[in-house]
Structure formats: C-alpha cells, structure tokens
Length: 232
Figure 1 (cartoon, rainbow, N blue to C red):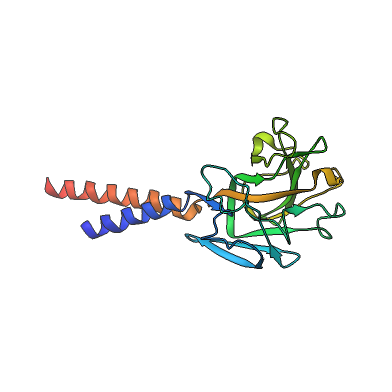
Figure 2 (cartoon, helix red, strand yellow; figure 1 turned 180 degrees about the vertical axis):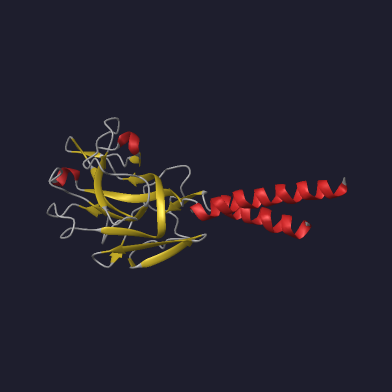
C-alpha cells in the first residue's frame, strides 16, 4: 500500500510539474553563448528543447540590458552585428530569427529590448507564430510612447499590447516563432530593429496526465474504502 501511494503521488507531482511556467532568458550567457554564434543552437529547459536559427547563420547581441529579473549579460538575440534589423520589408529577404520548441507551448509573454523611439517613430517587433494544428498567424508590438528618444527600451509583449495585425493570433499551442523587422505596415528604417531578450512559456499538461492524476486519486479512495470495510 505504501509503495502504491508513493508511486501515485509521484505521478501526480510529475503531472503538475509539466505545467509549470518556464523563462527562456536569452540574455544569460551561461545558457546562450554571447557574441557571434553559429546556428542552429539548442538549449534544454527540463523536458523542453528550444532551438534558435537565423537565415544568416549566426546571431549577436549588445550589452544595454537593465531588466532586474534577467541575467542581462547582453541584450539577448540579434542577427549578424546588432539587433534583428529591417531589410526591405520582407521577412524572408531580411533578417529572420526562428525559435522552435520541441513541443507545443502556451506563450505568456515575449520580452523585447532596444524598442526605442527613433526620428519620432516607435521601433516595432514583428513575428509569425506556427501552431500545433499547422496554422500560422502574425502580429507585432512596438515601443510605448513613454520611452524617450533613443533610449534602450524594454517591452514585455502580451495580449495587453498586441497590435492584432492578424485577429487569429493566439498565445496557445505554439510550436515555432519567427521574428523579423519590417512588414507591409512598417516599411521604414525608423522602426527597423529590436533584440529578443526573453520568452516565458508554459508547457500544457497533456490530457492523459491529468486523467492519470484523477484515476490515481480514485484508486486511492477505493482502496481506502475497501480497507475500512475489511476492518469492520
């Protein structure tokens, strides 16, 4: 009975742990190497593997980060020699950075750095998300009006500041994120670049694990009742 309880509670704890939030801190050089690095590069967070690739073969990040809960060894991910930079307004001809997850995740937020106001216009970050069902959707975030000209601004982008370029954009069930600068909406060198500093995700608990937890609890209850009946 004791062995059964130990196994049962271990299963419940494993199921609960699978749904915990994970902070992917690209400013941490203990996990993600700084300077110019060949891609693809893969790092693991528990059972989740995160792979970064760029269409130019490497990425680079500067050192201006001052966000208290990040490592801030640098500004996170850029491409070639600085941030992810505007190039012709086409994500596939410009600088493209891709983050791929080994399993579908629910996105809590994305942290951008270097989203400042330049020449009176706010910098913007664009992305395309790929989903577990094979669909895709795009969206963009931009610097806030409170950030001063040429300040190295931080933006924690979530649904509260989503510009909704595509109404189908969802934060759930994401398998890949493609980051670029410049779309048909933002064709300007004045909003040309950004650094990808961090992504916070949650790996959804599989339905089978949830059912396992309920099943284990039911079995425990049944065995306890059977033992009580025998004792009488």
